[in-house]
Image 1 (tube, helix red, strand yellow):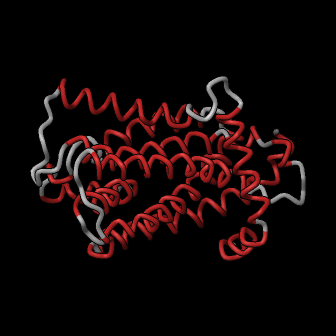
Image 2 (spheres, rainbow, N blue to C red):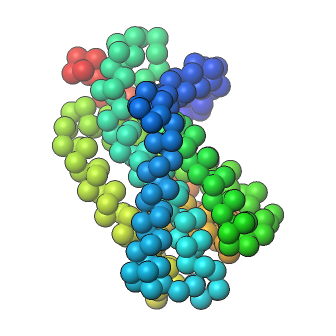
Length: 266
């Protein structure tokens, strides 16, 4: 199952990366403006949020003294990658219908192609964030920044499981795209991105753990802002990886079970 899929990825990594770059090119480089579109949307989104909370809601620095803009950006950027990946994965199979009919091609790759394509943009945005943190907000790099690849890997695995689920179900339930958009919007406000996790008290704090994306968005804050190692929260790690592994195995099983019908429907 999953182990064999990982071995297959290693064998076909050249083909996979070729498809990822092809997907990235088709999404951005074929438009009139081209590559800048990949970064205009996330930068604009961050700017709007910053303007609204700085000048509209008059948000001050956080209780730790960190500028609110920096605090917001480091969680907003991974969330934009997460939300966009889930949405494009949902619609991925019809886009790659020509590959599904080729029996030698591993169809499990398709959602992963979309996720890795979005990760290219995410990687560039991370560089943009680092430059802002260092030169705009005077936040010095620290050894904690070395754990960001861990959070990127965690995000990749979580999104892969979700991508397999939503993409395969979307073939049979055409309302899935609308459902995913609504759920993503709800999760944005339910995840402590615009509001601090510390506002929850008592047992309400455990509600945040029910949302696995909190582990990622808060993890970016731990990395860039709060200087906290990911392994310092055993409960959060246990819950997140239990959910992620469940989604991977359930997503893999669901995708494989529905896959024989893809060619006929598409």
